[in-house]
Length: 132
Image 1 (cartoon, rainbow, N blue to C red):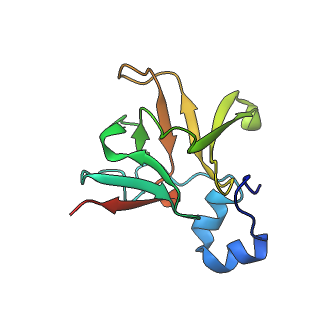
Image 2 (cartoon, one colour):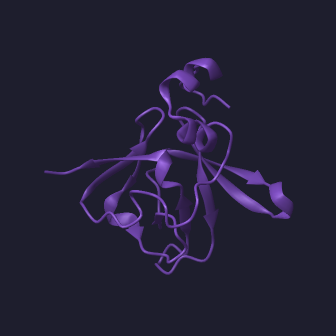
C-alpha cells in the first residue's frame, strides 16, 4: 500500500499509529459516522495526512455534507490518488494519500459546490495545521 514517494513496513506503521488510525489508514477501515474530532472543525488551515504529513485539503474546500465525516470539494493537485473500490458490494472510488498510499476515504459525485465532488474523508486520517 506504499505510495510512490514513501515506504515503511506495516510494523513501522503499527508502531507510529494508534490502533484506530492503523485500522483506517492502513487496513482501509472506516470510523463511525459523527465520531471524528475534525467533523465540525471550522478553523482556517491545511488538512494533512495523519500518516505522513502530506498537505491534502485546504480548509476553504471543507463543507458540511451532513454525512458524518469531514467533506471537501477538492484536493490539492497531486495530493491524492483515486482507486476503484468494489468492496462491500458497492462501486466506489477510494481516496488514498499520493505520498504514503494510506486510505483516507471515498470520493462521490454528489457534492453541492461547483466541483460536484464530495471527498468523504475519515477524520482520524487527518491532521489540521491551523493558521494562527
